[in-house]
Amino acid sequence: HVDLKPASRPRPPVYLAAFAPAAMRRVARRADGWLPIAVVPAASGAPDPVAALAERLPGVREAVEREGRDPAAFDAILRVNPSADASVDDIATTLVRAEREAGIQHAFVDLIYLGKDADQALDLVQRVLERARAS
Image 1 (cartoon, rainbow, N blue to C red):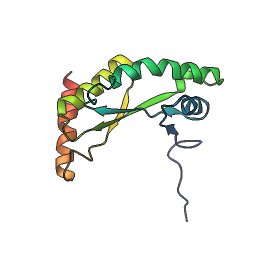
Image 2: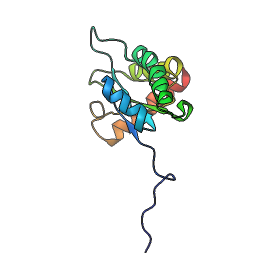
Image 3: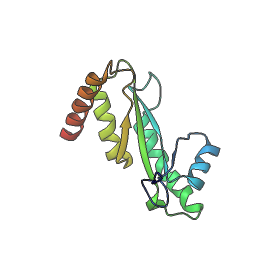
């Protein structure tokens, strides 16, 4: 008999989503990283999600340091939520800009509104990766 083991020692990393000031302080105090979100394309009149990330992430790292933690060890994983009318280019551009402008190197894309089945979702993933890598 062997019990399940965690993927990381001493435990898997914990990422928290947050946007309100109190929640952001909780992220800085407790989490291994921040899980921000970008809706693609941004709604008309909404702020640019990548610019908002680039503006907020340094403040989050400063808050991590104020909590006595190492800001270099603090990570961010961007959740990209494409709307039903998002294009492959919209998604890839968001990923590339998030890395270039905000320094976010990890992301996941939720294709629930675009992939009608697993094959279509895998095709979309391949096309997004190709476009992002070509940029």
